[in-house]
Length: 165
Ligand SMILES: C[S@@+](CC[C@H](N)C(=O)[O-])C[C@H]1O[C@@H](n2cnc3c(N)ncnc32)[C@H](O)[C@@H]1O
Image (cartoon, rainbow, N blue to C red; front, side, top):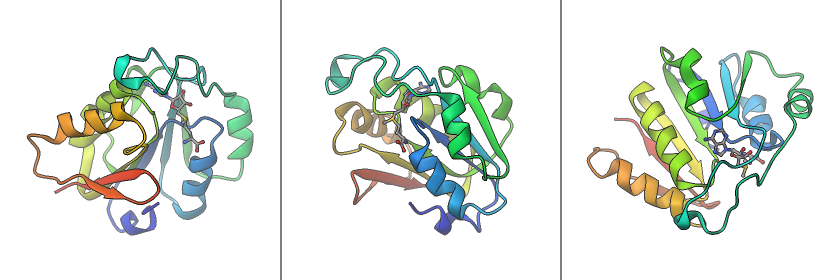
């Protein structure tokens, strides 16, 4: 997932969109000592819009306790339950080297980009799932990066990434 490629960049790691913690577990395996900030409602997807027609509110609900159990051997991990970006205040002064977005829908993706982009260190990576599959995710990326210098790089596995310049 490119986490290894970002380890030499200073900053913490974040994921928004955990569900049962599958991708967070993979990040944990390779992140070393870096702080990992994990965000999810644990009540599933928030309100969707017309562009998010593949998804519905409440989809992917999960249990925070189960996720904590899955990640029990992972060090320097911080959990934030609730709707992002309202839950992001504790990391408003944090800089990031790697951010994984897996939120499926337009508004969540746009809010994540607005929050993390200015907090990425140079060379840091934002990667998102569902770039090809979810119209809302793709729309949010195109809208947000229209006036930014970073190209959106589509990659295999239904993902896209940007590297902060
Ligand atoms: C497809 S699931 C994530 C899958 C996960 N990465 C995995 O490895 O299985 C999408 C998740 O995004 C979360 N989500 C979407 N928008 C959110 C927001 N604004 N704040 C917090 N969580 C959000 C949902 O609760 C859901 O758990």
